[in-house]
Image (cartoon, rainbow, N blue to C red; front, side, top):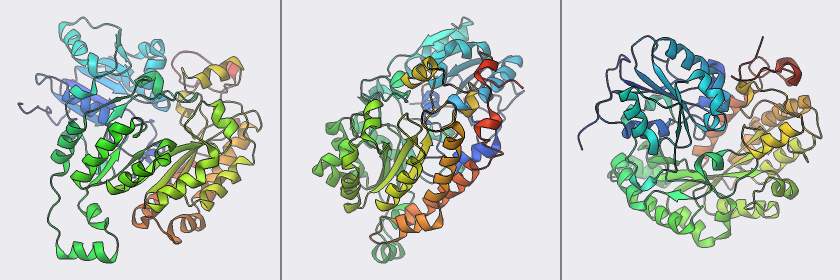
Length: 493
């Protein structure tokens, strides 16, 4: 294959691929700290770049870390972002269009609300862009772009490796990222993954993953005496971190297909790396799978606990979770040296103000390596949004606040203010020095050299999240429903 051109470095390339951020440097810093699970590159755009024919010059811009190259003659821009990025996304799109650039918008929010996005774009892509991208470029070159392009489920087996050369590694954690599968059969009421990627699970062939990882990492280098000493006297993983043989698997659920997951674990084992990713509780119900996870170099799994109430779990349709098994599942992972990075969601109809201390106590008692609770957020085109809308409980459609750190709806068993301040108090307790020491540093420890810096980083993030200047409480930063304006998601002043 001929080498692809990345275009001039002054920003005059034909195609701009922009991963948009919040529009606030301080908020960007909160979510963009160079940590696993927070700051990571736009690998979807890097894949789009790999699918772009060589006659187009491509530049990839991560707007959280670098400015958009306005006024430099870009002919076409594809901009993607999440719901809380959209007000800033629309501002960027409007400015680029005013300069004569054709703008296409895509992503979860655009797929949910395409007519809103079209107020700020020449075209939108609904769903996955890879399968439709060649048609978009052909229409653009012929001057006949459609307003809407419907992306189909991508055949992952035929995707080329992403353009890693376009990613500025200085912005991110010192490891590599990969996507091996898409789709989710669960369909939680608060989640938009199924609406975007579909309910059918699709995976890349294990041999394609092997080829990509070997191209990225190469064979393990011979071990110098000093690294052998560190491995023997500190921890066997230390040389892997020095060599940056660390991989984040960004799949929504790595173990959706056990047969394929086993094949990939053998690939990871053969490539001799350390890795972490997302999994469901189904993983912990299979002893042989847990053993293979440990043998493959897994250092941690991120699991969506969501709630400690089985009634709440059932109401969100997350059938893989059984709260009575939580503690035992954590123990099984810890026994194999695999850390547990748990996420929780607060604000469901059963949640009372007691839920904050319950989650902190659970995380500390079970020694979760990280535990990050999020505020329930009714993202557009999800069952949760439809429920909140029908009940008149939506407080704001300022999309900037749909970031899981702001209260955008009226809870049933607490006030919006109680949810806001209760979450802040919980984050402070979870990442207090006492909690970090208890969860990470007391024996038996699980890879403290990895999880201690991670917790210190989360502590820094929570300090920003607790800033009333950055995240004002609901009574000082929201528009009453009666004063809402439709359309672009930008708050009226």
